[in-house]
Image 1 (cartoon, helix red, strand yellow):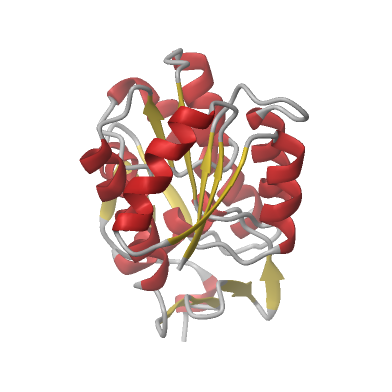
Image 2: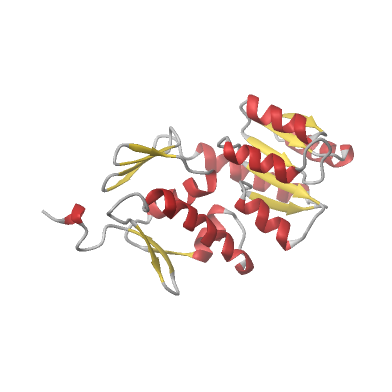
Length: 230
């Protein structure tokens, strides 16, 4: 597996690079945001480690560009601990957010988790009515039409499909999709679900994604839906 580190500070980049290399990963390191963006878009990386304060192009802009292109699993590692930046990054393609100084064992565990989560989805196909999610191809279709989802939207849908018929709480989504047990970031979940619903349900008469007030979200065909009638 190959990892790209984009960090403006050479000592920080070297610290993370050494840990990853000792763990058996191949690592590329650049210190410029635009160069990092171009590499991430042109090469197949298993993980992107991204700083926010970068010359050439900011980490925020890099995230947004990668989000539009489908993206690479991304951990933001930055000295900026503001809640605003955390929410922005998690809503715009980041899978995790760590504040410097980072403890290397924690960083390596998070990196393995992100790459294992991506690899562990191979070979699975989940369905509900006319909805099909193919994890090996990272493809979602409804009524034969492909849905263009971000990584977070895909991960949310995957979890809901695995638990179809059961309520999945916001806390579970925060912990399992973003690995952040932080109640203050529940808005991240609401935004992701809203965007997912606009693609999954809005164009179709039969609705699959339901909000259960005070509890969470439910993916199911409800009684009375045309698809359930004989």
